[in-house]
Amino acid sequence: MPVVSIKRAYAQPQESDGFRVLVDRLWPRGTSKAKACIDAWVKDVAPSKELRTWFAHIPERFPEFAERYAGELDANPEGIERLRQAWAGSARVTLVFAAKDEAYNNAVVLRDYLVRQGFAREQ
Image (cartoon, rainbow, N blue to C red):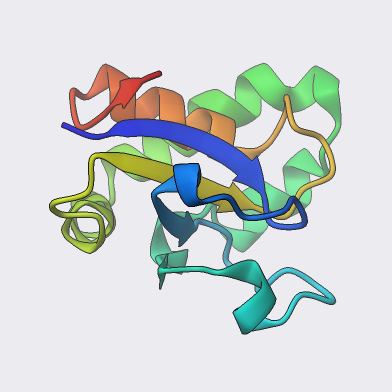
């Protein structure tokens, strides 16, 4: 079971990141694929466009966003399985996201979901 962490797409990639997987539906603006050092892009585990639009990165909406997003993940076992297959054999996984807010974003919810489901563990 890999150790999972999160990191902004605009932060400098480190070897200690391990397997880097982009978990946003859209590619981060202004970042080249070479510079981002992404090993996999699993966009179907990202929140739906409707949920992203509703959330609009408003911190007060985060608890409800997290609940709704977890519901979308529950309804998407194929996406979770694709994510797990992408990182298969990796001891360390970094979920890469583009949002400015490092505390209130989809990668935080996804990391916590994966840990709760027993698919990964936090550092």
